[in-house]
Length: 232
Image 1: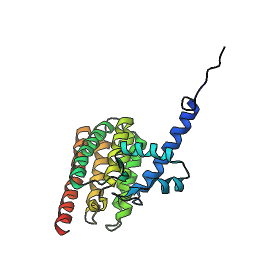
Image 2: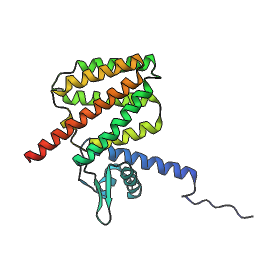
Image 3: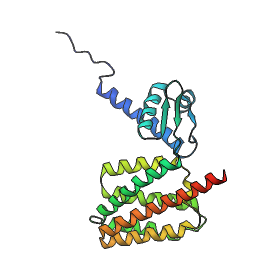
Image 4: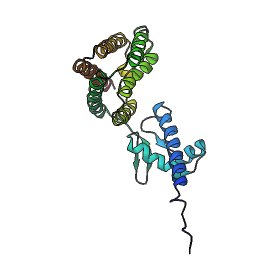
């Protein structure tokens, strides 16, 4: 009786190892992109990245496909892979979708938020209120954490994954336009008010506040983007 032969591509362990390596490579390249080390429009050099990450070009190309699906890179036939450039109009469209997801997260969380979650958000907003008007980078990190926490606290994986994908795409746009020093105190106060609504269990009010908050950021982005276009 002949023994069943399993090829490497059919081996479950091989598949797990391959998938894990691809994910690790994709995560590394993603960090290069989101940190700005690989700027929007930059071509991804397969040879250089493979050498830097100490992997073959096979897993790297699989990672490129993963990053293309997440909207961070684009691949062109016979030209290679490039970091995506998000233009103002597309960024505005992404903001519209994000605003809807923010509202959904707020509506859901207001009905189920725990004491511990509320305390975590309250502590974060108190720290944000203490941030100086010119501490843009520090506030930016806290701002992302605030919204990420609200979404993740809902406990809906589909919501978390979709939201995270949109936030990463917006990082490819000029994020600093959204954080002029004059906006920091107002953003902090809006965040504090959102936590008040969560504490009160006001689902509709929280959804409206988060939607308006996101739309305010979208408007400032459009204003700054149009001014930049006029001055260039």
